[in-house]
Image 1 (cartoon, protein in one colour):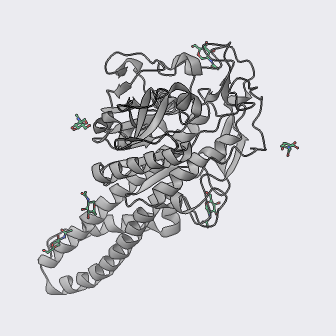
Image 2: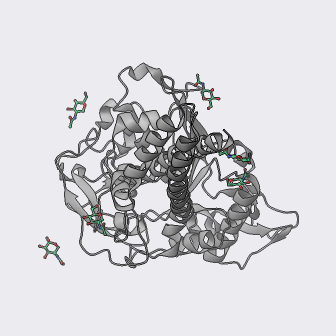
Image 3: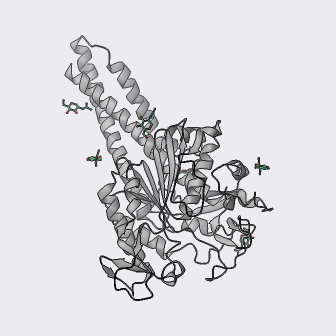
Length: 440
Ligand SMILES: *[C@@H]1O[C@H](CO)[C@@H](O)[C@H](O)[C@H]1NC(C)=O
Ligand SMILES: *[C@@H]1O[C@H](CO)[C@@H](O)[C@H](O)[C@H]1NC(C)=O
Ligand SMILES: *[C@@H]1O[C@H](CO)[C@@H](O)[C@H](O)[C@H]1NC(C)=O
Ligand SMILES: *[C@@H]1O[C@H](CO)[C@@H](O)[C@H](O)[C@H]1NC(C)=O
Ligand SMILES: *[C@@H]1O[C@H](CO)[C@@H](O)[C@H](O)[C@H]1NC(C)=O
Ligand SMILES: *[C@@H]1O[C@H](CO)[C@@H](O)[C@H](O)[C@H]1NC(C)=O
């Protein structure tokens, strides 16, 4: 598997230049007494300075461009997007069998909820556990758990959204716990256990001083009582212009991962008397896609007003496709293998809206465009192997499984960012050494 950073380094000469920078530091520090030395070194330093500033430009460009890349390309457009080098789109590829998967055993992970542990719930066929996502022109970096644990030290990672976010939260914790020897050092901070309606769960990795948290906010915007004098059928309202009141708790974080989508259906809105509201007025005729867009714009303004994106990396996961037989959400049959026909599931109006809103934001948002890749995985849903076998479930995913891949991609972006911060720090050291020498 190709390590993304080192690949990039090779292509751009990063490795060479960074170690050059280090050498410059150590040979530049000794006190210089003779003028000839100074002038000779001065030339060398001008050379280094040029190199360093070129690097700064490259790095700045790279840092600036990277978060924006997923926005500027659609899933079928390989040429415009790049990941580790000019020809790779993380989201365009295939599922291939890989015997090194799965990455953990859900029965042994205390944070994989029972309902998602398909194997533990009696699923017999096991090839669904073995698929690795292979982008066409590169690889998703291998999940090097020790490295990831170190890089996340002292960080606060927050997932916000519906049960799909809870699944990804569980997956990330299980992936990380596979590298933690003392499992008791990982615990839910309030002693809570996972339930479908729980509003908050926060797991602390005490040896690494970081937390991975989940806030349930299925619409992201605020649900509330119906306005006065509403028609009789209105029982509650979704305030599209107000972000969920718990949002203040999301601000102080290093990583924010959002999702919403599965609750934007008539059965969870109009059919239970929940209608849209903007300001003080009900919008009885507003369609769900329009309301979704208004809510996302509320989210976008909230991000721009509240989040310091120099610190907090913001991700939004696109819609997670389900594989129901029809729109009654009653029947589904989980396949043994991924399908090679996505039958329209690779697209979603919600995903399109997310991309569109993110594209128009000033803040750098990384959209995790997982809709298309996940659409092939009709084999990866919970199906009848949940904690309630009488109700099939072709929305949620088995763990281990597809959410692990979402996390591998998420983590690869994070590590790229954190590594480039280290590099920026190195350049600053070199720059100040240059300053120091000039001042002698
Ligand atoms: C997962 O762990 C459980 C409990 O330790 C064990 O019974 C089961 O065989 C393991 N499954 C796999 C696939 O290793
Ligand atoms: C991009 O990376 C892949 C492996 O990840 C490599 O095979 C390919 O040659 C690289 N392309 C360029 C243009 O460097
Ligand atoms: C633990 O992390 C917090 C930030 O989340 C930081 O302020 C604190 O200094 C860290 N403690 C240690 C011992 O590293
Ligand atoms: C973020 O970093 C940039 C560049 O270092 C700086 O100009 C900007 O003021 C910073 N923003 C905040 C909110 O700190
Ligand atoms: C799907 O892929 C399999 C294996 O590559 C192949 O045998 C099969 O013909 C394909 N089906 C369709 C409909 O393309
Ligand atoms: C270099 O020196 C200049 C002027 O003294 C100062 O403004 C700048 O911040 C210094 N740069 C670094 C990296 O120390």
